[in-house]
Amino acid sequence: MKKLHAPFLGILILFGILTSTAKAEEEPPPGQIGVAPSMLELSIGSKPVNESLRLFNLKKTTTKVNVEVYNWTLDENNEVKLLPPDEQSLDQWMLINPMSFTLEPGKSQVVRFSVRPPVKPAPGEHRAIIYFTEEPVEGEAEQEDKPVEILFKLGVGIYAYADEIQRASSMPAFRFDNKALTIKAPITNNGNVHTRLKGTYSIWKKAYFPGFNDIDKYLTGDDREKAPEGLIATGQLNQTPVLPGNTRTIVTQLPELKGPGSYVIAVSGTLDEKKIEKTFAVSR
Image 1 (cartoon, rainbow, N blue to C red):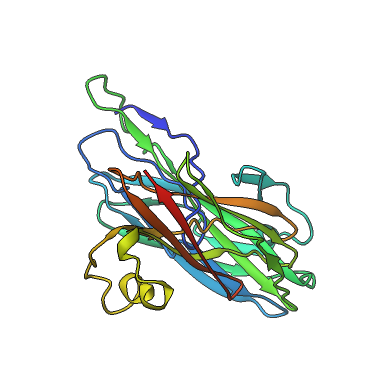
Image 2 (cartoon, helix red, strand yellow; image 1 turned 90 degrees about the horizontal axis):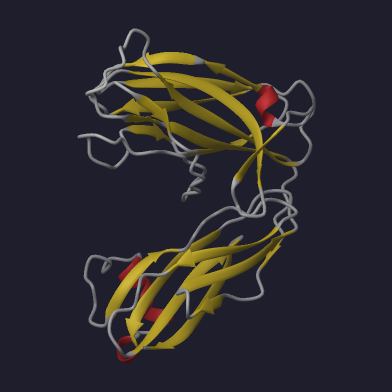
């Protein structure tokens, strides 16, 4: 079976960094390899900290996995950029076991790691990314009549916090791009740990918008399974992290508005526990 390495897809999800690919044969999406948790946040100090991740093989074939850990940041496009290690980088303080393993179909593998700083951690955030990379299984012959399989690469973000933590983020206001149908959140982070914009958006026909006092029960409360009249769509805001010392514009793509009419786009979220609400009027 021919195998190709998939390109690195920088996907920042609700809890961390996860990169994955789909398989180009009979096995349907979602991805055939899973990892839990998808992100870890740790408190570190003078004592070792022990944690673990579990990798799941949902494919019908055996897979071989190599494990690597790196120091990282985000570039100006919010894409992962690997950095060389230094005295204060988390990757240098981590012991991981195992570093390579074979995973049978339907099975899972626990990967344990320990954080043991040889120096006193500087206050604030220390980051590492653990990559799980699939390698061709030895002895598997190349066959021209077999479909191409895409090898996966998963990345799990590890955030470790050392006292004292400072949270100091700000956002002037949400902006709405009517042409691109996006919500833009310009965020400045002057703290020493990353921040995330957490929340939801909802799109309503203008005449049916209930106001923020009642909107939560439809999105997160007991009535969330009951779509009220006039509710067009809901979704999560983009939770890409903004790292310490950075200013980034976090963009959330909205679904297409079908048909003419007047709509209200309601955005409700929190940034470092500060509540933020905003509505936009849209006509089509």
